[in-house]
Image 1 (cartoon, rainbow, N blue to C red):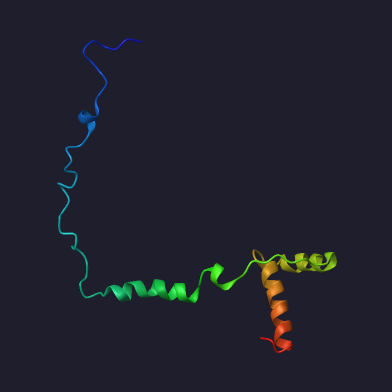
Image 2 (cartoon, rainbow, N blue to C red):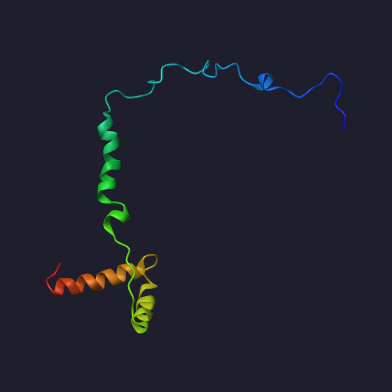
Length: 105
């Protein structure tokens, strides 16, 4: 397939902008901002959520342990109704209750 005579590939300079992409944008970036609202009050809800819901890595520890087959079968069966994380929740509650009865927690 031949090109038409006198017609070449468009160069970058032909399609690039003139570099003044902000020419039509209002330079006053503070329009619409309420100066009476303090930044601390805006950021506070996020910080509050982060404090109330710490990352899982900060509150839990992943450890591998062995269970007897019959114990594991019961854990599997009983945790199905709980959903994701059910096995961990079930085992944690059982171990916590045991430690509370023993006076360790």
